[in-house]
Length: 194
Image 1 (cartoon, one colour):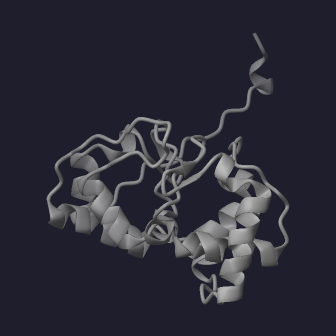
Image 2 (cartoon, rainbow, N blue to C red):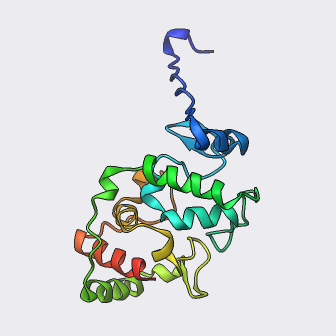
Image 3 (cartoon, rainbow, N blue to C red):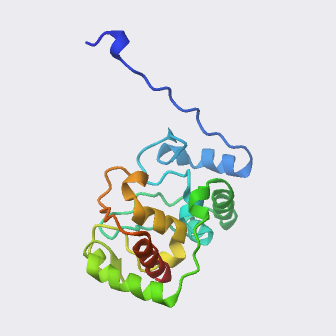
């Protein structure tokens, strides 16, 4: 046993309790049993809501909520099928799009040139991204399938993830290649084009 003076306890974050239609849905479907917001909630899901509006496309969120599926090829779906109404899925997607934002991700300039996209495609092969990720059924089984990444992920999130994956998910299997900004941008252009 350690003396009490040596034990550091971290205060628990205040539970996130939004009002309105989103708050009702969050409570009804018990989203915070698995997901977290600002450190409050469950840890079963690897997807905290904090910046989800800057990570995922709004229409993807709504569609996914109505029919959840696995994003990683090798993992089974853990997200329950709640049979949400379209209006409910839209409410959650709209709230995420408006509230769960990270300004640093939203400022990313996503106007890519064909040269950047081509360079990104070449980097994909040189770095060996296909060893872990699939595109069109070809590739590895470790990381998420990126076949439709352009419809699912926002460019600012792709770039931030590629530049510093461990910052966003400590212990991730995604390697931090220490890519220069131009290469991060090129890979982001390519993945966004998928």
